[in-house]
Image (cartoon, helix red, strand yellow):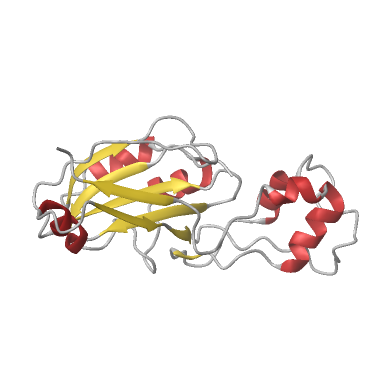
Amino acid sequence: MPISPAVIYTKNGAESANPVGSMPTAGFVQLCQSGNVVTRINELKVDSSVKFVTQTTAPIMPGETRAVEVEVMNPQQQSVHFETMYGKSKDACGVGSLNSHSLVALKQHVATEIIQKDNTLLTGAFVDPVLPAGMTYLDPNVCPTAMNAISCLRELAAPNTAKAQVRFFAGYFPSLVNALEVKYGAADVQTLLFPTSGAIQLKLKLKH
């Protein structure tokens, strides 16, 4: 699955600018829903705790790598954060954080590089996609006008009318996956699936 251009920023403290349990900002929702980084970057630029912001170029395809330079002025008190949209989802983001311990270890040459995976988060702005009440996975009337599996999945993920909170992605219901596979085929559905534990590798090195 491709991922969108990513936003990368340095901020004071350990938490990201939209941690789990928080109310999602408009920019975070827009990034995780459409892959558009503009509003998110503008939000971060006016956040007084954020000290540096950059982005990667173009969507990143499976197996591809992007390298960007990140500025950290105070590694003892700052952290680096990464945010991107999983391209074939409704509002799933890959979010990774590298804390001050990792930054200090690099600066002091205790470690030559830090490698970790992202966390997969949902903005909470949409409900989990599920089959309409009374339908089974064999019902041909699921998403009657959707041309492919991702269009159907997005159609079924309605706006959340309750208080939205950023949360961990728990995977799709088996009944939904079965219905999409029956209607669109396994090959199409396979492109929608990614680990709930994250599928993006982040690597941080000290620039020499």
